[in-house]
Image 1 (spheres, one colour):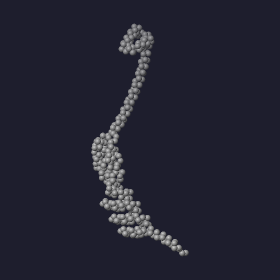
Image 2 (cartoon, rainbow, N blue to C red):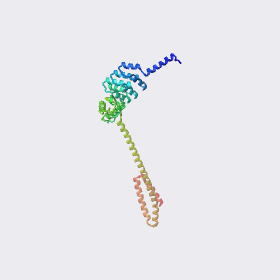
Image 3 (cartoon, one colour):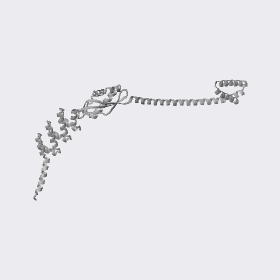
Image 4 (cartoon, rainbow, N blue to C red):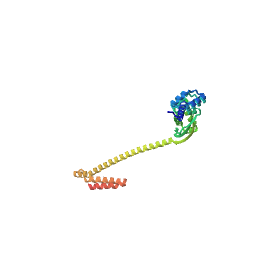
Length: 334
């Protein structure tokens, strides 16, 4: 069976496309004219390993033109590890032009650690400013101050892998501001010399173990907050007042209990007196019958009692009538 020329033409075109896909001759020629020596079979093996040859070759061309000594195998390894090859090449070129010591191994390690290595080099060349949030602290005189600082930092290439980030810098600077304000005797000292805060904070070496180097700390603004000392004193006074009121209420309750107990004892004593007075007429009658008490003795006792009642009535008019009535009642009983 003879094959038609059209079928042969289409088949040959498809084979040519497949060949050009696996054997990027144009890319190989471009690399040769750019001064990059790379084997054509290496490009084929890159395609088989699912590594884009154009990415590796273009990165090699850029690195070679910049005077960097990097092999295609190193770039391919970094790509297969999940790295960003163009960013690493840009970072190496920027570091080389700025005379910043940065090796290919360091750059790939920083990139694989999740940091933007090109941004790190840029920050190392051009320091950036980090604005801290409002930090509230209280001076020793009880006045609250709210400070805001600007921290100028640059990247520390050697500490980018494993070093702390911006959050740690902000936390340490905030802690230093609180310590500096808290050690001031008066809030006026801080308002008069805000640079005192930045000097004390810089002396603490807050950038140790971080990916940045602190160049300067500038206090942007200091505002006066609440009078925390007075507020605490008011709260303490209110607490003391409540404690005093509770103790006074306890003493009042004890006094009421004692008073009620005394009243009960008084009533009991009065009952005993009334009971004893009720026995007097009986005793006098018994004395009359037995002859131990005569009529003259009785009248003498009544005269003495009347004289006593009269004196009591003169000394206390309000109780005189009551005593007289008591005497008359006693006479009737006898």
